[in-house]
Length: 334
Ligand code: KG4
Ligand code: ZN
Image 1 (cartoon, rainbow, N blue to C red):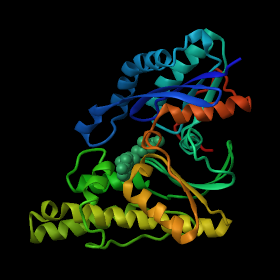
Image 2 (cartoon, rainbow, N blue to C red):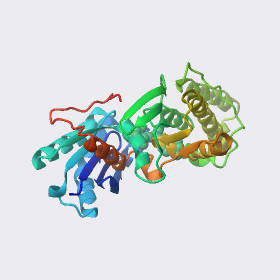
Image 3 (tube, protein in one colour):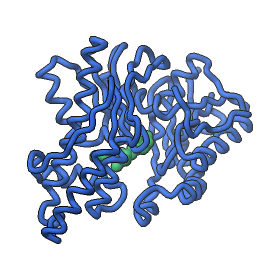
């Protein structure tokens, strides 16, 4: 019998559904919520409402595209946390109702673990143990991955996530939300060494990104006093320089973690892993340090249900089921 799982992701501002059959992701349907662009960030209440509107068509499309009937499903996987409570509630209520109606098991997935397990959707796949730099709008973690469901956070940010730093710096530059991809775009045309910004250092393998955003703000405030067109005249160089600084901060700790654990397989995951500067810098390390680097396809970097399906598959094999009385965990830990 084939093992068929429907997966649902609704932790932030993407409503997504995926079908996985015997560990192979068949599709990954994503509805992006553009409404938040008008507000300079994700508005939780609007995200919940958009999930409510999108979830039925997204799930229907995923089933139809895979040529699967609801009665064919063996389990439903959903994002249990971390994420926005209202957004998580839409996905979890939907998944629970469906699992109850079909009388099949429910799999509550940790969104951050799923970002890492996105590496098992396609070849090449890392071997255990490997280190994963998980970088998103809400998290910055270095994770030691010992097995599909055995992972340990060995370093993390003590304040802002690096995605937040990208988005806040973009906002200071007057760019719309989410600013990370725009910084990436303009950085390609700029000089990364034109401006230097102080890098905050933290103990061990931990990070801090709140200081750099403030330094960036004060630097620009002073420059704009002298030349009101400073940002417009230097946009590409500013983007390249701030991106370069953030990437250097990220890589320093990854290099330290690689040495500390003597692990040379390095993966990246999460929305910021879509950043071309980070992808290039990591790839460059391969020849210098004989690392093996694993970078997911763009589609599986930002939030998507394909990765929830992959995590759901491994949880299903381990019989790690949720009861119907479980509730979402906005601050879910590993
Ligand atoms: O993983 P994700 O899609 O959602 C969360 O779970 O947070 O990550 C979203 C974050 C945002 O901060 C966004 O600006 C950032 O990923 N991001 C990027 C790029 N693409 C997405 N940051 C820098 N460069 C990119 N190309
Ligand atoms: Zn995410």
